[in-house]
Amino acid sequence: MKASAGGYARASDLRHALDLLGQAGDAGRVLVGGQSLIAAMNMRLSTGDMLVDISRISGLAGVTQQDGRLRIGALTRHADLGGDPLVGRHAPLLAQAVGHIAHAAIRNRGTIGGALAHADPAAEFPACVLALDATMHLEGPDGARDVAVGDFFIDVFETAIAEGEILTAISLPVAEPAEVQILKEVARRSGDYALAGLCLVRRAAGVRLSALGVGSVPVLAQGAMAALDAGDIDAAVTALRAELDPQSDTQASGGYRKHIAGVLLRRIWDEIGGTA
Image 1 (spheres, rainbow, N blue to C red):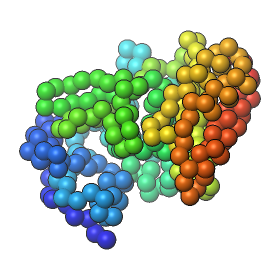
Image 2 (cartoon, rainbow, N blue to C red):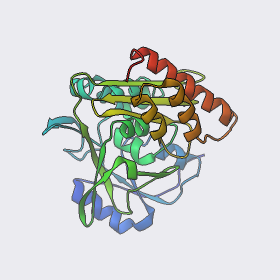
Image 3 (spheres, helix red, strand yellow):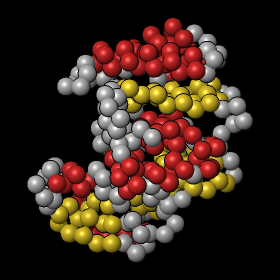
């Protein structure tokens, strides 16, 4: 099949992009790498879209550090994240995720903003930013606003981005001296979506643990986090499995995905030395 688009326009700057989206109404779609959007259009899952290309807007890509925060532009490509020294130092979880994302062609075109706005619950980046306690920066016709990551992911492929808004950047705390960040997942083949995966961030204030591929949105496993902070891995595994509600499909049953999540948590716990 071929895509059925209602139109295409390349935005020259952010204000121009917002104006184009406003004119398009609910048919407006933001286009950057197009790794998910174009595939959906080719399968006629989305038709009649007005594509607003923001890929050449300056200032929406790159990584900077300021005032104890790491800011990542939404147009930063996966491959660039994987090799960025600031990301490697302060958000190695994102660098680890890049190695799990599909294949080189996807990583060279896909952007972190596109992945987060697409909100596939089986993708790595949504779970990563949840574990990292990120803030999502949006720009719309009424100005800029920030959304805490815990309020951003609403349902499968649904986020808090309102009609006419664009995700411009994410920011997160810089890493503490002894901070630990680990991503582990199980997939049938390299490049496939994970059957289940976990992202763990351990800071002085405690552990943050998120899960991917086990629900309609990435899951912040708060019961498991409390048990890990207390140093009880058995209780953490039990709590984690109770907090997850994965669906069964042709790849794995829901029960098997829960089992995998528990196994991954024990592996992570062993890797970090089994201490709170």
